Amino acid sequence: MLYNSTRDKSIHLKASEAVLKGLSDDGGLFVPESFPRLDRSLTELSQLDYNGLAYEVMKLFLDDYTEEELKDCIKKAYGDNFDDPDIAPLSYVDGSYYLELFHGPTIAFKDMALQILPHLLTTAAKKNGLNDEIVILTATSGDTGKAAMAGFADVPGTRIMVFYPEGGVSDVQRLQMVTQKGDNVSAVSVDGNFDDCQTGVKQIFNDREFKKELKDRGFCFSSANSINIGRLVPQIVYYVHAYCTLLSNEKIKDGDRINICVPTGNFGNILAAYLAKQAGVPIDKLICASNINNVLTDFFHTGVYDRKREFNLTMSPSMDILISSNLERLIYFISDRDDKATASFMSDLSEKGSYEITEKMKENLSDFLAGYSTEEDTASEIRRIYEDTGYIIDTHTSVASSVANRLKAGGQISEDEPLIIASTASPYKFARSIVGAIKGGTDAVSGSDLDMIDSLISLSDMPEPPATKEIRHADIRHDGHIAISEMKDTVRSFLKA
Ligand SMILES: *Cc1c(COP(=O)(O)O)cnc(C)c1O
Image (cartoon, rainbow, N blue to C red):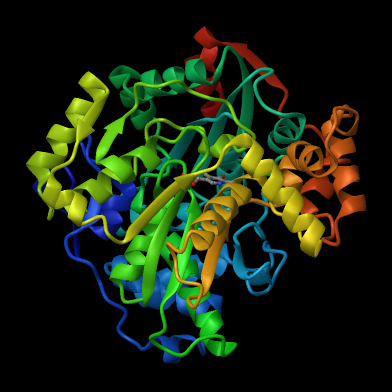
């Protein structure tokens, strides 16, 4: 199994090389040259635990890793760092199955990939004779930074430095980052906004002289962003796991179809579900749910991707995105792997801000449905489910839930097929919005972030997760605060340590 670039099919890399490289030099994303199929039946696979299944799925995509290497990565990633032994349990509530992807150390679904990526990366480095220490630099508006820190913490052969905008993240997000343990991690706040942090990191990545200086000292840069196939592949596993769980609980028979709805931002999570379908999981519809930044809803309805529109801040911030990078992979697939066409759509996107796919490509989108949820829809869905069942969903999950239930009511998805809703964050991660949605009124949400967590504890049956318990008393380990112009020197001195 080799990987091509979406913008140049003549590129052929082994899986471990694609993991190491992240992004292709031509700006394209790496894709498997054909869709691998599961080589054991779903009935057989449903006998396995999460880690056993993870191996069966990931071996198809990462086939130059040995069995021992891959199993070792999986074992290090999914264990008692998760607060549920099932890793990704299903909760049946309100007529749907919520696939809980938030039982990892930072209580959001990014953990599912970022707990294993560091191991896939260091294994890939070893396999390819790269002896440098891998340095991850990340700009974050809150969540990804912490999830990446937690993943790389104390992984030998790696260091990670995270830049976040001073005053631009929530109290809980800041506390989560500044208390992160590990000798190889650092978080620094920057006098600037998220874009300044992002631009600073990009400049460092593009600074050849600096890269050479660090290379001479035995360091090489890498990024942990969501376009790496080392993040995409682990996400396929939990969709297969969800199907297997329904099978082993006798909710379905092997071959019965299910529907999956995913709250979507960068299009990574739902693309993993698409790859699960291509691998042979009987998935009927993939439902792409957006908030009012609904560029993807319009794309699926009209075939036009147009980022020239207002950007809105919502209560589902991880979905506040106007350029969904991973969509490029779907564009490549639905164009029947036309690299030239994909490259030209992407250049239209960056130069003109939009592109329109062909009629033929539109026909290839029949696996997908799409919809969006307004802020009001999102809040009222949280409240309705809480009042009807006592179960509390997070704001991102609520976007998906509200879209899926609307499609169900409209007859666009079959009532007879089980519906799986990807539940991407613990409600404790977004306590303020959730308390606001359930209780209403400004009084309820006037306290600190920790007050909001306390309010949620009193509403919910769900025990407080270790992630928020910890930050109440943990020591502050990272108190650096710098000007934008100091980012490079800060990296330099971090690497001297
Ligand atoms: C990142 C994230 C999403 C969006 O996932 P994509 O793979 O970017 O589409 C949704 N919900 C939460 C909580 C997230 O952190």
